[in-house]
Length: 417
Image: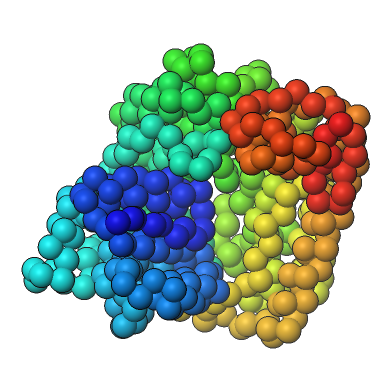
């Protein structure tokens, strides 16, 4: 009897997978595989369908339950698959009673699709867990949903409008995780810089970060997941400058380096805004390491426009690049715009990745000789404060924070002395 979860996509999904697995186990379910999908690209949905078919072949007796963003926006796609036993929406998947009701699965009259209107959901509750199995860092949801409507993005329709977890609940969750051994916590959400707009007093993300560090002094390392730099508040910048337990790594939702493309994406920043933010943060925290999401081949993108996305890698001093070849999502405005030829999209994604690889090598070379505190993730791998991977020559204990001197690199990872 077992409950297995297969997770696609973001850190928020990882956190929610842990909560779902516990709900399903507490409900006494067995031989269930939960597929927690992502809808950020059409390719992500295709991969989920492919995974479902593979699971069905390898575990013919298991019930397959599909949930997540792709299930929320395309429930009929998954319900039509004979391998799938049930499709559950993003709101329903986080309720213990949803999993409790499955005990009579196949006996009662349970409908195959349990997906309701996500836009009707007005609040996000914290789901208390005491750790993340198999992980040395813990993820904590502080926010869900998004009020913005970027022209390429289907996620608001999978997650609903922006909703924040009250600060007190966040503090309690982090304190519980630390008491159970978590050395590092990552704050996650869909649009976490919108945090607090729906809460009394409208506290901002920086206010919550400072409060969390103040009320949980035992927390050794705090990270922030992907942010929209244009919404970074003064308290967040102050925390970046002065809170040593806030790790020097930010992943930026940039998406493009050309102003016209950014406008057609309906982003809230322009090229110079991103560059100015990175320069400001580097002044406040010289050891800050930046990652970023960039889309290659957005509709109407010319070679000249794409060149500006290549250039912004250097101008923003980016290190960890997540490159997405543009993938039209039905129902989004960008899907109706003049498309770039697929071979050009793929080539631009390749060139962006190559640029990212060069940026990473530059960063790795600059780290040689530095002293870093590395959180061990597996027997021989860990991450620095700046989220860079470090490989050890021998076995080390997962969960430990080890001071090391960086002896070199292999082009992808740092090597510990």
